[in-house]
Length: 440
Image 1 (cartoon, rainbow, N blue to C red):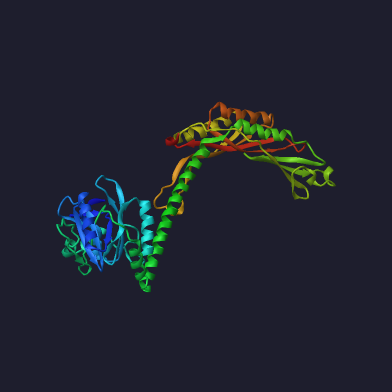
Image 2: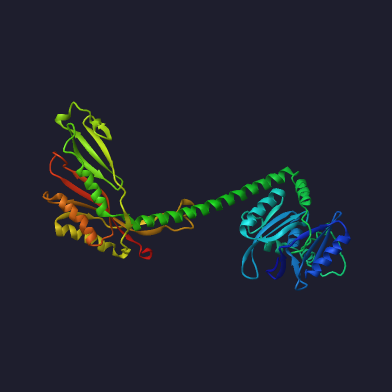
């Protein structure tokens, strides 16, 4: 419970309502509330039932918020975000039926509880007007307060009575109380809700409102899921740039596969070896000696045509290490170092300019989230320019990457001229990665 300031009006919110059938029980409840310091009372008579609202009143000009709502909208559910005196944010939820705040349905709670509460209340009271700052609401409490007449405000003021004053429902007087004891008569709430459901047209309109409310809740859940997905994708992209397989270890795994290939196998010869970070693929072609032999005799072979098959070799798991933390401002320095290695050793090294690695937000977040740049990535290619000592040249290039402490990873190797098919050629390709300076 709390007393909040709306415009120039002190409003009591978070009220407990209680219902009695005799004046004696009502007097007893009023005395008990006064003993607890709840000296502000508002009483309404509804048929044979007496409804009491109590709240501590530091002054004579405190008005019951739910009572004001009931004066303007006799059947309503309010869900409004409010700032408490201590600065915390809470949700004020109250239900009005037949011009009376429903027992135990005028409370302050957190957002999650408020969403569940309003869904339940609207199912009990499908014809009620939805008020507050919740999505799809007809009006905020301040707008309701502005529309209330002076007479309606005065009928909602918490009194400090010395005797019981009954205000009939015809006068539209409503009761407000925060923190008072009393019992929440769910039967009372159910009975009035069932009467309201008889109006099929109003129920249809309210069902549309509930459908819109459920759609809004689903969209909010979808947005939260999309935000988490976006954060995960950004982190995954950063991790992919921060970690890579050890270049020398990966290169050696590829070379080990090439060393296991025979010069020929039953009249078939390996022509080309292509490797990536997961596997190597050998392309075999039929030689004149192999015309009468099926290429499927080669282990793990896949037929391409009558004279060609491919064979797959898995790569053993390679150790993954952190990428050297070179900031994005040094991307050109890395590119020129790779180019310089080629010029120095007569290698054909072609480093491309680095491009930004950008993670785009999901479509539903395009208006609320900006793309995130996690770093820069440039591709490079290596090939020997001298037919002599081809393998030793590629060995030394991979060694030089480590010697110069470059943030470089290998992504592929192509080896041609295997076996008896001519001179050996080796080309390598990969990436150099530079992280955003803030991510180092």
